[in-house]
Length: 131
Figure 1 (cartoon, rainbow, N blue to C red):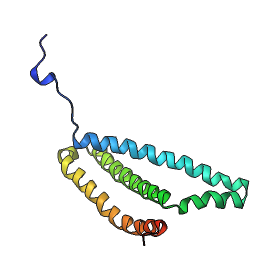
Figure 2 (cartoon, rainbow, N blue to C red; figure 1 turned 90 degrees about the vertical axis):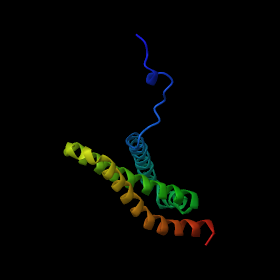
Figure 3 (tube, helix red, strand yellow; figure 1 turned 45 degrees about the vertical axis):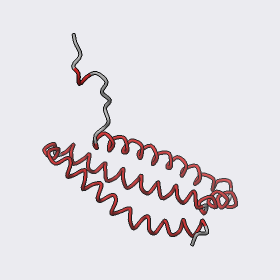
Figure 4 (cartoon, one colour; figure 1 turned 180 degrees about the vertical axis):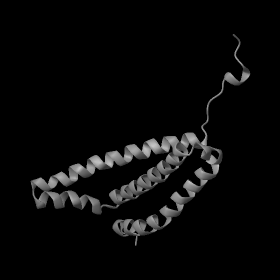
């Protein structure tokens, strides 16, 4: 059977839906990894207040605060994208409006990250000694 020209040498470059799916999985893994780290750093309280305070002092580092900003972005994206996925799952007719709903969810994510980045970014810059 001869291959069609379209089947030879093509590489799937991805659609917005594929990137949305991939980011949803990545942010889900990031959130669960943070959850494990949070359980560990909270469990340190069992070794006494001094050990717990030492672990918490790590969170005053600007690099760790930058990671926290990334965590907030991951949680927000995962939640907003998950809501979009639920809309498509519960109301299949909405898939006709997939592009619009996807753009709206991206807009909600960006709009919610603006104040978060401003507030957390200010603290990060202060911790880094820039402000």
